[in-house]
Image (cartoon, rainbow, N blue to C red):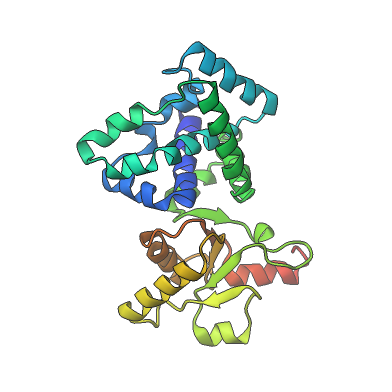
Length: 264
C-alpha cells in the first residue's frame, strides 16, 4: 500500500515537473533519471534526510501551518527549478550527484523555497491536486489511476476545469481537430493546429509561432476525442519545450456531450 502510494506520487510529480519545467524534465528523461532516483527521500522524510535540524524545523513549521499533505510536491519542484541551469549544464555522469546534493541550507533558503512553491501551486491546474488525492490517499479505491499515469502524455485536464460555470474558458486551447470541423464549431479561445494535415516544415513553423505568441499562457490541447491528433500535438509541443501544457481528457466530443447534459 505505502509503496504504491509513493510510486504514484512520484509519477504525479513527474507530470508536475513536465508542466512547469519541460526543458529540464526532458533533459532528465534523456539521461534516464526518473523522480524515484532522486526525490524518494524528499517525500518519505519531508526533506529531513540531508537537512540540518534548524532547516527541518523551519520547513516543517510551514507544512504544519498549511495542513496540506501535497505542498511538499511544490517545494520539491521549487528546489529543482532553482537548480535548473546547473542541472541542464551537468553531463550524464554528474547529474545524479547534483540532484542528490539539492537541499535548503538555512531558514532564508526555506523561506524562498516556500514562496516559490506557493507560486507554482497557484499556477497549477486545481485538478492536479484532485488527481494526486485519488492517486495517493485513495490509491486502493482508484485502480484506474495506474492506467492514467501510464498513458497520460502530460497533465490531464477534466472539462469542468477548462470551462467555468459562466461558460467562459479558463485556458488557451489548441484544437487539433481537422480544420473543417474547427470551422463548424470551436471554443472562443481556441486556435486550430491540424497536425494531421501539415507538412513537417509547416508544423515546425506553426509551433514556433505559437510558442512565441503564447509565452506564459496555460495551454490545453483538445482533439475530437481523448486520443489521436491531440496526443500527437502534445508530443510535438513537449518536444518544443512548451511549458504549462495540459490535455483535455474527454476531447471536444465529450465536452459538448457534457454541455448538452447541463453538466458544464
